[in-house]
Amino acid sequence: MSDPHLGFIGLGQIGAPMAKRWCDHPGGLTVFDVVEAATAPFAERGAHVAASPAGVAERATVISLMVRDDAQVREVMSGPDGILATASNGTVVIIHSTVEADTPAEIAALCKPHGVAVLDAPVSGGAMGAHEGTLALMVGGDAEAVALATPALERLGTLVAHLGPIGAGTRAKLARNLITFASFAAVGEASRLAEAAGVDLAKLGEVVRHSDRVTGGPGAIMLRGTAGPLPADDGLRPIFEHTRGLGEKDLTLAIGLGAELGVETPVARQAFDQLGAALGVPHGHSLDTDNPDEGDDR
Image: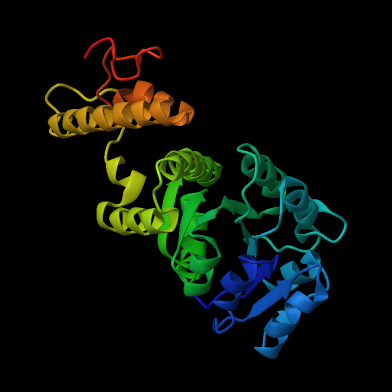
């Protein structure tokens, strides 16, 4: 089978470095962006610049979208100059944008009568990962379409994970970003606590980044196939019970330090209450807010 002609729509902060990794694709590359200046570097590298998404679909049979939101995805797909105006039967469209959980399936249903397959493949790794080609791509969609798109996707990242049917990639991205932004909230609270205690925050940041590289950070506990409680005979149970004990001890100490310094610690308190369940080893602890050094089962 000859290499498909590729298309890329949306050449922003992440889309542009992603698309540049396709510039030397043997089957060729066609690009489009509403900002004309964004396409100039691609023209210089030999890519064809289309005047519209429809122009991309006239040439390309594997097309990636990295646009801003649901409304733009819909416009690019089904607007007057959208992909469906010209796409040939067998075209695969890949939605990299982070959209609402049900949008990919709705777009796929819209495209099915045209013989166009849709994958959702949001990415993790940010602009740095896009530039370095080290993104993780979370893919949802039909296995046949995934197989057709995988060689192109493998140029964009070092992990291409097919997570299930259409929409699975987007749901995975929403869960993955929950980890990121909830962690940022914890960082804010920890920074306030450390600053009040006279700790150098820049140096603390160095410690956190160093230790996360060693331990793997929050992803290090994502070893289970279910989010429910671990069976008594599961080999992870004693490890995670030990982790729960350490975590509850350290969270109690942090909450106590916050009380001493007058720093509110709602993230730490919620983490204390939810840590056991998060690890799959729940128990009856709940923090006594009047006596933060003690839990009711300690």
